Image (tube, rainbow, N blue to C red; front, side, top):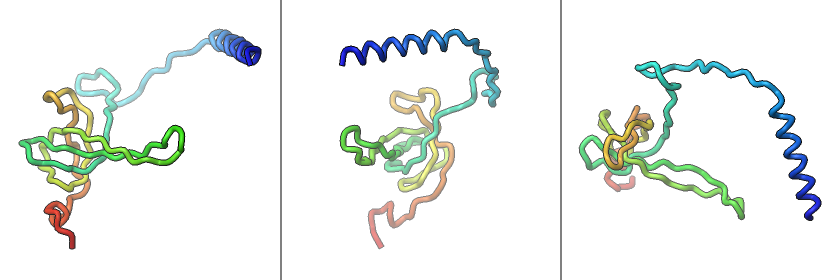
Length: 129
């Protein structure tokens, strides 16, 4: 076992030396800049469902993602909640796209970019048809 590790480490070092010998040319980034012209203009976006809309100009958005368990390889659904600034008037049950932004308050780091679909009033009230 020890020989294999030593051999593997030596080949990695050889590869690193070979890789550093080649010259790299810096690539100019061409992207849409922000209003000030600095940065790349790319912001994180998430799509989720509004689970709470009782605050003024603030909604809580639940974003679900699928993750594979490290040992058992089973797909698990994880939910993260984000507080987002809402100028659009989203209500509970709406599907919205949120965008990362500067800190707006202690917990708000996102804002509602657009409302994708409106939630049904029956679902919001908790009454199932």
